[in-house]
Image (cartoon, rainbow, N blue to C red; front, side, top):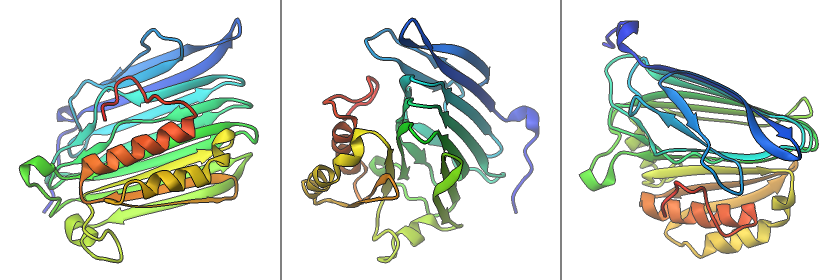
Length: 272
């Protein structure tokens, strides 16, 4: 039986960001932080914002609400300081709600490091993305199921991951991943995860990335230890990855991101 957790013992984080143009350059014009969430913008040639969860991870009853907007003609990247850890809990699920809006001719990159689910973790995550018709987005999320070095599996827990993408006001992409009370057993099924311990989804919408489908597929072929596929439809280049070895998945994801970004580097805090 799940136990109720007093609200004062839980961690709650809110974040609201807006990128705008100033003198022909993208700047972080609006920043509102609350609870356990902070953002920092390191100096560099490109605008790269880093989201930090000062609580050190998520547990049952914790909540995250993050909203990011790119005004017209802006270009910036968001990543995270480290992998997000979701700890085991006998309480309610923790929740993460993300809302992204990409304005006219803007180019947005949402490239957080992976989410690590400990045994017994309960996570409900909802992502809503709205793009203008001429905007571009590169988006990815990856999940690691258990700490491989400790021999851990997600024998118990729950993951509900929902993604919705609207472009020009029309729904163009919808996806739901629901793993119930025995994630490891479900991932072990050949028709579902084939024993995978890590998964990732990568979406490129608009921009030059849509011309690189063949190159991405060739890159996926260079990583035979990762079960992967890429497709292009409805103005979306989608890549899905599954692997029994999380570091192998990260290497494959990194190679795919470099191609789709059209540059040989990754966010500064990524380590591959």
